[in-house]
Image (tube, rainbow, N blue to C red; front, side):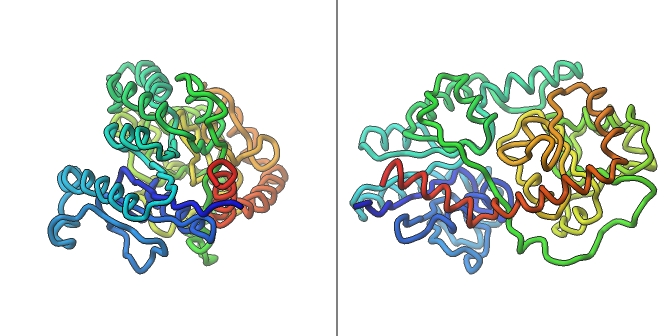
Amino acid sequence: MARTIDMYFMLGMPVVKRGPAYTAIRLAEQMNRDDVHCRVFASINRWPKSDISVPVTTGYILNENLTNRLPHRIAGRFTYPLAEKRLVKAIKAKGGRPLVYGWGEISLALAHRLKDEGIPVVREKVNCGKYVAKTILDDAYGRLGVTPGHSITPALVEKEREELHLADAIFCPSPMVAKSLVAIGLPEERLIPTSYGWEPARFTGTDKALEPVDGPTFLFVGFACVRKGAHILLEAWKRAGIKGRLVLVGDIEPIIAERYADVLARPDVSYMKFTPNVGALYRSADWFIFPTLEEGGPQVTYEAAGNRVPAIVSEMGAGAFTRDGVDGHVVRSDDPDAWAEVIARLGPDRDTREHFAQNALEHSADFIWERVGERRRAALVERFG
């Protein structure tokens, strides 16, 4: 008879309603069923407790409201180690055969302690392994002739390598993530293929944020930086020479703003800060475009599909979702000319756009958080139940 798994999520980040922490909470909620009991531990919780259906234990020392007003880089120095201690204490108090699920950075001390005590550890590799990510980004910044704008040091690469080799299993949200871990010597049998998902309730409504224009609208959502391929996109847009509109939503990395000021100033290019009503922007778009160089499983691709917007993406941007020639187009190149050709060819092609859009919408139904959580839970029960 399968045993009940007591799963302890250890988040190496504050709990907020965005990014990897949002994903972790949504998955914990969906995996929390009769055969898997989930509990979350984190340094700080800045997500209203009433909106979370699983228990969250933090490392608060002082007044909670006071702690939340401090920047995490300061408060986290004290609250994160305490959250780890409370996780270990909770495991000892509960007994049984627990499972620790590590999200983001966890301390090497905790990883070794869990290994020594025989407690199974599953890690979530949100993005590619740091060794591969550093290689990709160093090359990209080098081509631009600037100092790499990332914080991945050789020491961090080695620390992650050691952490991951201590794990009993690792969830990989895309084939590219799995490939990056094989590159640092992790055995394939320890890797669990999975995906991320999306939340339809965040995209209710029919309003559109943008007025129609003559020609297709291409939408990019996220930090417009070198890692996300913003330089490739802006150069490709300049070379494509089509009638239409490119819309970027999110902050822009300084080197991108500087190098491509001429493109960003064009009347057929607009950009804005991130907006909570991103659904209205998806509904205004004909194509979602994402030439990202390094990723895990970009949720924006799932969200675009759920809003009936097909994607033109890199292999990294495709993640575990976009099927080339079915619900989008995968560009297997970082050459701006290749992207310009696809933009010019697919942009005005309404028939292909409609075919991809319908397929993407139907495909997205299998990636709502509930179904993603079911598949992950089944994988854990099969391995550790």
